[in-house]
Length: 79
Image 1 (tube, rainbow, N blue to C red):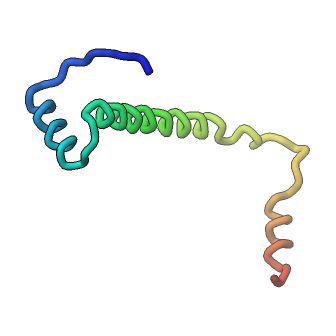
Image 2: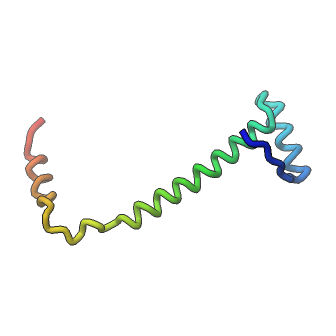
């Protein structure tokens, strides 16, 4: 782990102390968890952007089978 310093407000410090006391978790662990959640939220956004960019990339391909026909055939099969 890498040590770093941050500045927080008094209200944030009081809230962290309170949460740490209630949960039995160190303040540093609470801060790491919050950072992990923040990073995860941005990763999901990045993933969504990538999916949106990929939308329609196969639109003009002519070498693919007719997926609607395949789906109709599969729907007729009794399971």
